[in-house]
Image (cartoon, rainbow, N blue to C red; front, side, top):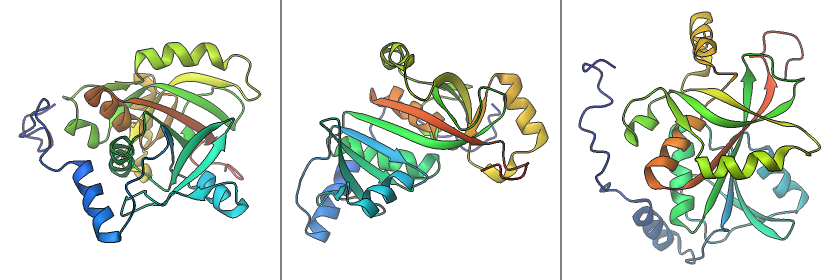
Length: 238
């Protein structure tokens, strides 16, 4: 990476941030008179918002009264006896990481992201699911957590636990690499060819940054991609 690029300038990857998510949440609770209640230990990022909307519309979830994020609501539901906190519409690497940081600061132990993605290489009949084990870092947020590199990766201990559990699911989950971009409408032929050559099978907007956060902070984060389309280049693609 060229030394002339501005993003890596002034980065000290071992230093603590002056602005901490816990401080923001404390002040948000004070300003909005919210109770200091922890979020569920398992939280879900729902960039498309479909899951959160379903919980709200059907009454299968309730709003978390202590969630102090200024920009989102959290819906809590029960999944086989486990409470799960769901935040919708956290689209893109910067916003997803902002919300994930606040989830961990609020008591989460595991954050799962389920995002829609475009297929770059044939994997299975769409729609299908991908467990993203590596994400091509074509976004800016990860550079604030880790030094420049090509890939971010799913934490190894989570991959070792998840892959054996995916064999007999009703809908198959494929382990594969993704391309994380900040600019979905700049998926040019050249950019797509480069991502495919690197080994990416799908394109999404959050995983590389979330995995960089996971590595930098020692957090447990899992990114799944719901492969729904091939970039809308054919009729009824979505």
